[in-house]
Length: 181
Image (cartoon, rainbow, N blue to C red; front, side):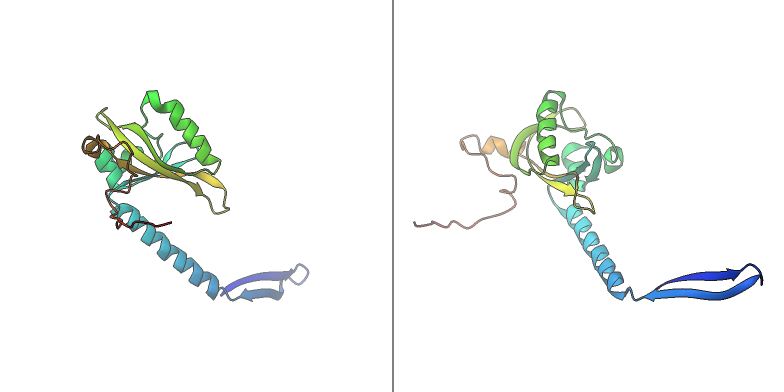
């Protein structure tokens, strides 16, 4: 229950003469709030468990999400990057990054964009990035979430293949189905 009370004070008599009150049953609200909290915890655990990097940045390109796979791939600990500018963009990729980021802030998702990113030790790696706008409680775009897959290691074995594989190809095995028209 949620309740609200208002005391009416009689200045002449010097004491309370009545109390107005209202109550509201908020059981359904509390159940929805608990379910939302549970869903949030499940999503946080899923992001932690993913074998590919998940990086969230706000509208100022400050890091808001950095999972363990991001630490493994790029070398920065979560405590080093949260609230800081995204450190993985090499200086020669800044223009492309900000163009891509502006389109994300306009609501456009990016799918399997190949580019280079920087590790903490300064080395560059080839990655495949897919992004989606991140929205706030009001539905307004507040940043973007990105899934980043390292393709440098796999690139050598795929040199003979002209078509690039999507970032998720090494994690998902699709059946070979021949479609007839």
